[in-house]
Image (cartoon, rainbow, N blue to C red; front, side, top):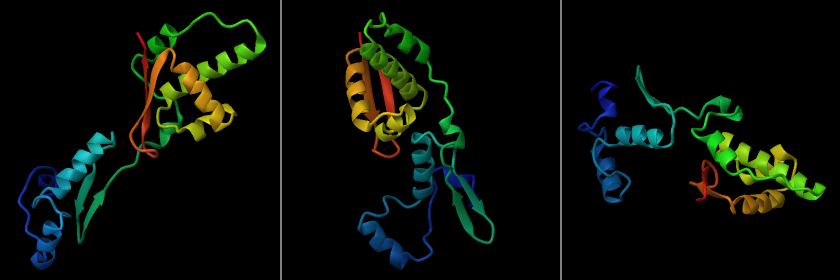
Length: 162
């Protein structure tokens, strides 16, 4: 068995069948030979670089994290169109102008860094998490803003409402 074949469906011969059978019956193992393909598929679904299987004296699996460049703005298809399509005339009074500008920066930040949670967004914009929640509610009048996935490891999706 080569490490390349581990990324495809393959047969599996457990080293200790006495432990493998109860693990299968308890539901910890779905099918023989699918563990490594599950790892590859989960990494792909999470948008991670493909995992690596290394066989030397021992067997190792490398599961890559998201890039360390995540704090830099990332290209988001149609981001510019999403932002421009939601623009409106800037409000006149100073309080409304401040809120408008903050909401605009918030929207741009959510689009360029979709993995930031509300608390992190608040820190970046220098406001409280409750202010971020209120601003997101205001933005939801024009955009469909949705948090997708788990609390940690999820992401924002933004779509202009019709």
